[in-house]
Amino acid sequence: MSRIEGAVALVTGANRGVGKALVEELLARGAAKVYAGVRDPDEPAPDGSVRVPLDITDPAQVAAAAERCNDVSLLVNNAGYFANHRLVLGGQEDPARQEMEVNYFGTLAMTRAFAPILGRNGGGTIVNVLSVAAVVPAAFMGGYSTSKAASYYLGVITRAELAPQGTQVTALVLGSVDTRMAAHVEGNKADPREIARVGLDGVEAGANTVATDQMAVDSMAAHAADPERFERQLGKLLHVTTLRAPG
Image (cartoon, rainbow, N blue to C red; front, side, top):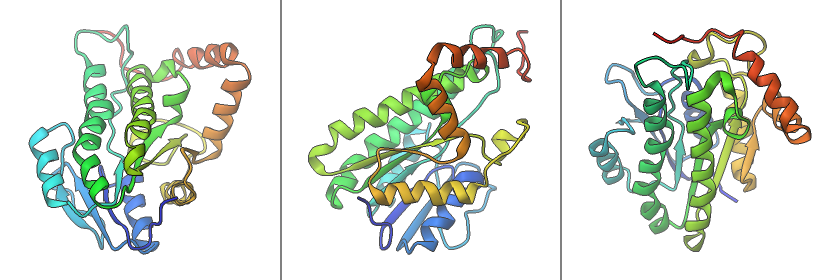
């Protein structure tokens, strides 16, 4: 179990959406300090947090963040990227590579950099902010789904490798959330602050995986009940959603 009150946290991608909500919720729960990793130099950090310039795909910035934030006991890997392209029929450019660079390799870089820091600070906790597309193959989010699935397994393996130092690893599985990334999605979308509240409840309870909203719960249950049928349904969405086509 991870106690947030008194913890020192670092949240990547903290300037808006779920990242900002997580910073605000951490502070509301009594975190002693929250570093807000912000990639865009023009973006401010949430009130009450400590702004840290951080592009998780830049090794120099990751190393600088680890050196500066060496008191961290809670690492929240929230930064992510969705290209909104087809995976196989994606044209000449390769957005899937960038999705993998951010969602998997960036998360791996942060995990490697902060694992020894967490160990020195008593073990601590890593929180990986994922998507239902990480645990259910979503054809209409091909590169994103693949990269988030890689990050999901990264978390499982991290938990095993860091078990001797007592590091907790929790995956937050999000459905449809009211953020800029999901601006093109129609229908009900969860409030980011509610996602943060449910997610951090799970972290404090010591959960390995937390489905943070009803869409995530329902999707995971439907896939578990009949994987082939649910995957066919998701495949049909590929042909009715707005994706950038080849060319």
